Length: 584
Image (cartoon, rainbow, N blue to C red; front, side, top):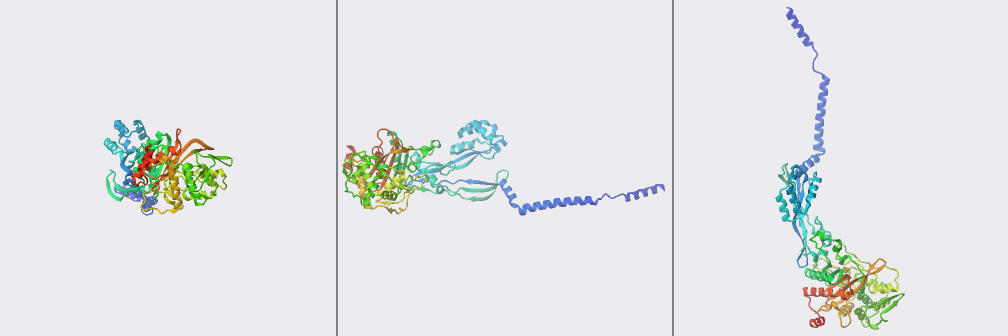
């Protein structure tokens, strides 16, 4: 009985024990769970609704790959289709230092030494470079390597080393047309010459292929493909046959004279097309180590000089146009020296006491030109020079073309008027001078010059009376008459009537003139029906021979003869008589 009662008491105690459930603790836990769930839902909503592009971008960074497909640069050719600049396929060697060190690729040192040797790199410098950039994913080791070298690199099977398709510019004409064509940089864009001027035209649009890859580098999806567009071809007005002859002649001349440099430019007077543009010395555009700045300068368009006696035909034209003289007017020449103010004007060659304007041009009389200049308003002579183009660009639009220096004075002294009439006090470039003589050869019809082959002749502007031009052309033809005392007789071409004007000028330096000279010859041929205009400039000829008639005229004759024959221009003079004169 006592035992039964005791059991009942324990059950009652058990039923009255406090409950383990705590309401506030349950509420806190539920609240935390609810807040965590709300945060997760809010974060998911934010990512999916308000900022969905970020995750897509992160995923694309890990899986999307874009492969560039470079396009070939346009071919540059001469007027006859001969290639002057082409693009050849090459490859670039690159490294992924992270991948190299991840796979322990630096352990096989011999293979890395072989890589350095084939790329022409120093072995230790290559290893040090990879170590320096070991946290990078892309480093160029060599650019524009040949296919044979690229094949050797691929056979080494070095981890983290890859090849990338590129193209390299090659110039078949080498140094012959280097100044005109120019060069491209390592990235394929033009740096000089035609390559730079027409870079936008020659450069194509590279293609792009976008794919998605998995973690093992396998392509799982092709996203897009943008086809590449090759660069457009460019056809120049240059005749490479004449260009080669001109360069060979110039190169030999500066060695034989000798001279510091020489430049030549030849234009078709009927179209304004440039048929040859040459500088010597030149450089090899295919050899990057041969690209010194003094060699790469295209002096035809960048270097200006005082044109000297080459401007005299235009002073005579103005005097005849204004009615001061005609072709038969006699001008008194008071000896070999003429006092102008406190200065003296002198002649190199003797001339009669009375001479026509034709004789003044033939003997290149500074005194005769001085008297013509002082007899007319200086504004008229300035206006003539401007009409024919002494103060404006030639029209070829090559990057780097200079315009020279044209005076702008309010007051002119008599000596300034005198020197201006025989080519001092202004400066021009060879391309400007050939532009002026092309206008003269076109019977006073001025049109812009072009370095591109023209499909249609650009209409010109008549700036001088054609009849007066014909008279002056006959006058400058007499400059090549040796029997008559013409100073440019070395410029004559057997079988053709050639008109030239030679010139010699001291080089200007700070404060005056130095001891160096520039010799030049400018002219047109054939006189009966002008087709070509040419300017030859020889810079700093050495020795006793430094006059234009002795230095530049022979170059003019040799190149002009070849050009006329190459272009099949019919002779307009007695070939046999001319040949006999040369043989004598």
